[in-house]
Length: 532
Image 1 (spheres, rainbow, N blue to C red):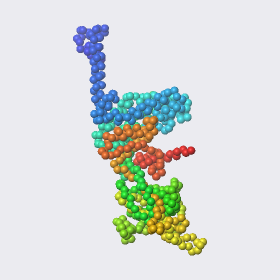
Image 2 (cartoon, rainbow, N blue to C red):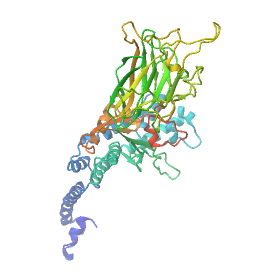
Image 3 (cartoon, rainbow, N blue to C red):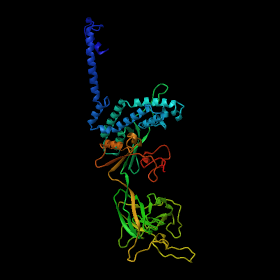
């Protein structure tokens, strides 16, 4: 029964108010229309005060403003819809079909769907493959995708996502801020992603979770005419506590037997990378020793003047970029101590942990060892927190011997301290000083204090076509995360890079990627850049 009929039913029956063409019915109908409008407006006002029922974006944002949620925190959502609508317009345009197919793939980049490339094949008829995209079947697939995208990008969908964003912020606030979970959930929410359980590395520096997109796209209709959402891709979102950056000391000239100290602030012992710069043909058989650890590395060759010898943390040696690991060695064991300056970390013969030096490769510092060796990586020394004592050596010249003129030269032991008259370094000058044999610099990966790095999926980099580095997206995510950040913590946002970098990443053996390993720098091999 309509509202007008309800009004007329209140009149006495003998008036027959409900009879057609009676003026009383016209008046009641007019009054009912005004009451219907008023009732609808009152219902809308009532819904506007309930976040789960608000119909308009302005109402959602006003409710969010009660929690100081600003429109700037929804910028990534706005960028996603703008980018998707721009690609949808290009796909629906009159450009040649190859350009429209490319626009379709870019459009699908804004949706997190688990569909193999080319993803437009999901809208082809059964039995057709990617080769059909160039013909009439491809045009049909474009039409089907266009219809699905138009439905997914309606304003109601935008309001729904904005509502989920506001609710996600409020729920996270209710559970607490300033934690790893708060930052990961906040970052996922800022990108309109839902996350699963958060995983942690053994050292508790890396945290990651698998995430799926809230913005869903329906596939082609089935036989019943119904279109189900395409499966959502699992993406990785994570957080790195105290991310590493490379710290480097100045290159300082050293002479044979020089002892020196390096001061460092940090969290823990880390491995060193060592750079040796050649000087005036005197950089012969350079060696660096950590006196506190009893570890040393050396190079059984010449570093020409102006050249650079690098021994990285993984034990690979390179001379001007060429691999020379087969001429490098390392050792561990007792090293000399200075009787005039005793130290608690000195190795003493009466100590239980005092051992003879053991080299890698075996016998590398013994008499008669033949270089080059097989080229296996060596073990590099480290650097501790506070003051670490080092020493530098070169192939100082010592007299050797031979049985006769044709016999090979027999050098003194250990060979790391000796040389021959062919390209050796003299012990000192006439004034008693020792000449510098080269410049030595150290570098290492240092954890940055009071810093966290949030890692987000790489596909969001393309939301702003004028910004190849995705700086705007990173800035918007950082703005949204500011409310969850603990005071005094520097927060950085970067994109996840799945390219494998030797020495900095973990290569996955299968299709399933460990989220924690993915944060270490890469999971897949990638093509080297083209060179002319």
